[in-house]
Length: 85
Image (cartoon, helix red, strand yellow):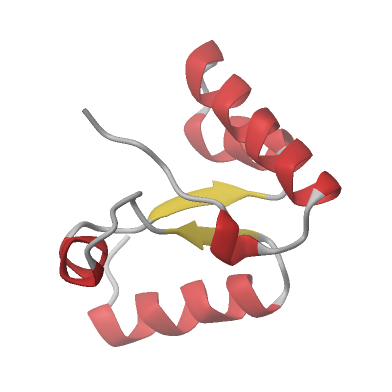
């Protein structure tokens, strides 16, 4: 399915506004590094991942579940970041 970059960004913003997607920055003390790396998207429900991907990747589902639990316990998204080695 083809769409323009503008359309994709618009739909991603709609999903974020509806609290379906949560973009998370990489962990770094440097603001430049945080802006350089792409944001990682987490979904509000693992069922959405299964519908879109049509395959079970237990690692991604577990990572998303941990993120959802962090959101439930602490609603401050600015204190959550992902780590990449």
